[in-house]
Image 1 (cartoon, rainbow, N blue to C red):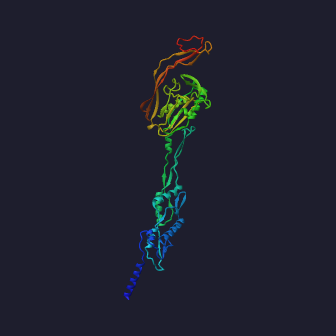
Image 2: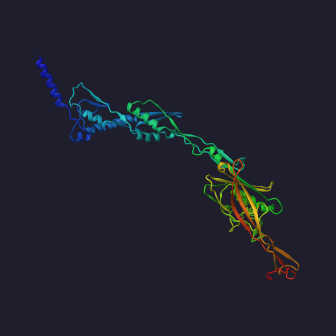
Image 3: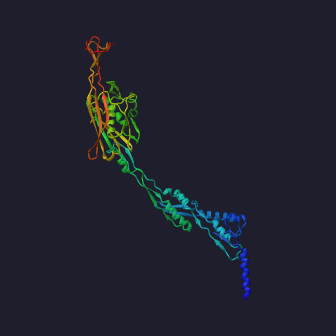
Length: 458
């Protein structure tokens, strides 16, 4: 009896070994050899018995996609729940490895022997993180940068809007957590974590970059400078340049900003200076605005590109500190050589009879300030007066065309002071030579005139 049992077990062992399937290194190798899966094999509930490796994989891929289409992962955020369809994530299954294991099972099995295998889902971290970046974009809040808007109606000249921090979903941490849930099959909700997004420009920076850097005023009081149409031109010019913003490195061109001074441009006729004499011209008085701006530019330590002085020193500013302009002629240009935008504020006060230019931007380094000083260093020779006959004048009539003026040399410099008011250094800005101007008087043909007459009869 004992011998019979031994022989029976040996027969079963031989039969089992004979029916065992060979091991394959890949599904392609198995398909090439014509392999088929054995009996009673189910993978993830799908009956793959007797199928080729390719057919079994196609059937399992379809089943897996169907399962993913019915599944979602839930991300909890303060706004609610974000549902992410599993099918939209880069989830894969180890289907090939499981099929290779199934192919290695014995081909035959008892009818009552159900052989079940399962595939494990997985997701690579980087593709998963990229997918979550897209899905969680709706949860992100972009930071708000502060803004500064020039408004001459407010006390500090600027309206500052506050900055606000934003947030961005921590997709790296979320991907790591979800990766574990995918592999374990856990579909419990995940709570989103966020990383702060800081604004690139804060309200404190905006307040720092809109400080008063320099201020300069000149007066148009009196009968010479306070003529109605001249004041009109001053106000018009001030209003045009008021609020001008210059980016770092940007140039300001006074003539270009004001445009041609003519009747079509709405300018009034007022006293100006041309060829050493007072003339009536459109836009007369705008040089006082360019002069006031010029002084503010020097005090803000910005770079002057082009500037010319008048024929003679003027009464509203020290010699050497004026800046004349004219349509198609002399111009005043400077560059914003600071690191932040500069805003020009220009206001004409008709009650105080002053034009004031303020430049706003970032204060000078370490709280420095600049004071301007000018001095006449020489007086030039008097060229006297020239007389010329004008037969159009009535007997005894004279006309002063040009007043005799003695020229001078004026030096202007900057004095730098520390925040504590201590003198730091002195820097020369210009040395201007105002030429002497020979007077010119027209006389009638019947009039006796001085010996220095050198003109010709007209």
